[in-house]
Image (cartoon, rainbow, N blue to C red):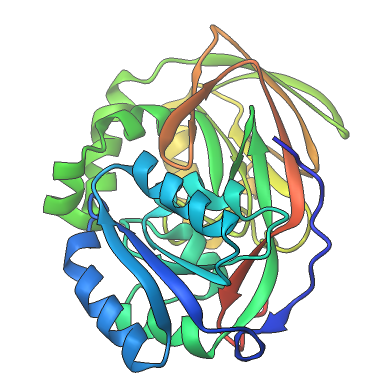
Length: 311
């Protein structure tokens, strides 16, 4: 996969054709419910939808997005959660197409980074009235990601997050999954090498994040941004579960990185190794394994954001 930094600049959606396609993941928590409303709202606002379709399989949705981008459709609107959006962003890198985001998932951390409200009418309004901004992507293993790559506790949580549980409990599903995962998680020996040096320690969880937010509303750090050309890494450098509770209490402000038990840094990339080798959760999906290379792809994705976006 080509990681070449995008050199595209911001422009206004008003300066582009309103030709568009709309593809929605019906497995996302609000996908089926929002599809018809989104299609109607976009058409009412003057967006010419050449094609609109609901997909049950993310692979099929991604393939359709790839075809639209290859055909140089100016605006490709994708509805789903962070995992759905993550599965399609590689199609847009270096292309003539712009991504429009309908946040239909549970956490919607990427949409939160962009200032897009998880409401169908508001999201459609952003697509029509917003502007185009180039934002950062992460790169993990052999693919791009929009939000986070993690090992440890978060991976156990991801395994517990079924589609049925997400639909039944919504955002509360994370607390349920956390309660299950924290009883089972085991210490991991990790080695992380970046341009800042090498760190080795035992941990229950390690997070490599792109953008500001992760796990829904929680900042990766007080200053993290989706346009700063850097990834944010943090990990609890202890196996003490009480320390993890202290970390969790600071997550709403991003000041978990200030705890003495937490290792953190901003980085442009490096290599993550663990003992034993671990599955890596990338944007909510178990896609990679350690050892894993990771990097930042600055300003690699053009996406529509609100006019007042300031990250």
